[in-house]
Amino acid sequence: MGFKPFIAIGHGVTTENKWDPGTVWENNVEADIAKIIVGGILEVFVSNGKDYVTDYPENDMNIIECVESANKRGCTHYVSIHLDWEKAESGMFALYVSDAGAALGADIRNAVTSRMDYIDKGNRYQDDYEVTGTLMEATIFEAGSIDDDGQFLKDNGRFFGNCIAYGIMDRAGENYKELDGSVVVAPSKPENKPESSGKIEEDGKWGSDTTSKAQNKFGTPVDGVISGQLESCREYICEDYGTFEWDNGDGSPFISALQRLIGANDDGWFGFESAVKLQTFLKVPADGYIGPVSVLAFQKWLNS
Image (cartoon, rainbow, N blue to C red; front, top):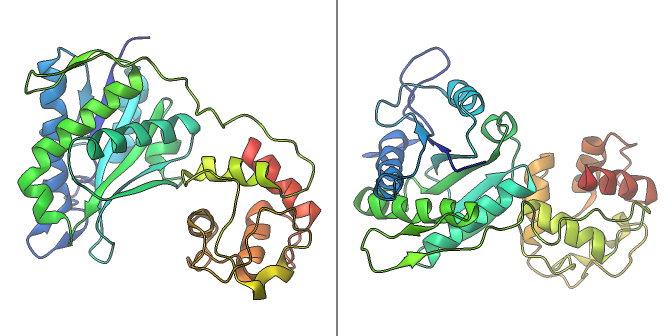
């Protein structure tokens, strides 16, 4: 199959061919910082003689054109570089819709954190076009907050991009030499899906296997436990098979990720609103109480 990633500068041109700077905060412009990072990615590919497709340096393709180009040219991976808005907390995260896309995002994040001190906010499931329209594994890589991380990424974006390139090649199982020439890396090619991505039993019972599958799909820590839930919300789970911890804690990262997908308040606690939003998302009767019908629909969605 070879190795030919598409590397996109996440902003630059709209579908109406107008300038699109992305998010802007003071002197920090998303498109400009993303361009620095992409330059660092390509620097590594060129040094290692790797093939690639990109909209760098012209930055004259909108996201629809980028996705079409990646599909038509048989690219093996798709990575689009973005920055989050000014109210976002510091740190990077990767957006995905497929298990392979989640694995790509994880390898990129690991490559960055193993080479520099940087906050890692994990993977997040989000069905944006750049990860749904692509025919290959894909991630939208949010490099950081335009406010908290903007200046750092302007100053260090080239090296940050180098690290992203190493992560993409780790995911692909490519041999490469780092730019300082001191290390030659020959990682073994990962499987197309994480180990825990097998289908679960569709039995309408929300146990630890369903939770683990969901945590894996959303890119949050996988332990089969939904921690930090409010005792007052217990009634909205009709049958509890031991996967929820009703300890009035700070909420669950998985529940937060789920809430972002279904449009509920992102507080990490699964209550009535989250139950209704999830049922609406799953197209089952939305009464706010999660029972076997809702759980079965959720399990079918996780397996799809």
